[in-house]
Amino acid sequence: MTEVSLDELGPVDYLVVEFPAGASSFTGEMAAELRALADSRTIRVIDVLILTKAADGTVEATELSDVGELGELQVIEAELGELLAADDVDHLAAAMEPGSTAGVLIWENLWAAPFASAVRHSGGQLIANGRIPIQAIIASIEADQATATVGD
Amino acid sequence: MPLRPSRVGRVGVIGAPVAKTAVVAAAVTPGPAPVAKTAVVAAAVTPRVGRRRI
Image 1 (spheres, helix red, strand yellow):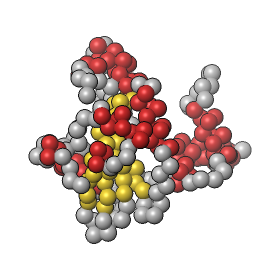
Image 2 (image 1 turned 90 degrees about the vertical axis):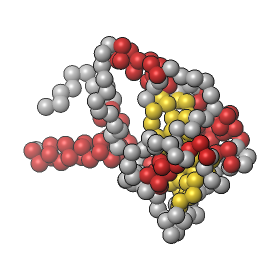
Image 3 (image 1 turned 60 degrees about the horizontal axis):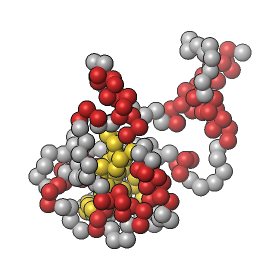
């Protein structure tokens, strides 16, 4: 793994994608898109784990390197760090339904790194960030439209 | 397969149990796009000159 200086590090995010029992359909599309994001230097994948949660709630974690034929993910696997600790597995698996499998992805937003660095150089510090769900945007617009209709 | 030994005993980066996010079923369910709402959202995120919030 290439060493990254702290000053040049972009924001690091994670997601947990759950595949309910019997609902997964792996065609390679996800791997190809992830590889494309990495190849274009939009993101750098830092860590990947596959979690399975049994019906009794017990959780098993699998390293990407133990998955077998990785295909598009082979190059990504070779560059992975090991950011997640064993303690993190239980915390991440808390959101999973029993009987499901989940992929955990940790990545650095390379696209945001130069701006984040510039903010730090300018004396700024991050005090809040987040994601606005599409549902929240829809709800806001629909509430706005309902208010406008009542006012007509 | 177990985790690598190097992950055990370290301080984690996920501080607390993660709560389940609301599932965006419409976005992940195959089928026709919800055209009406897509247009509404698109309008909300499109640059609008002179737009006022209040």
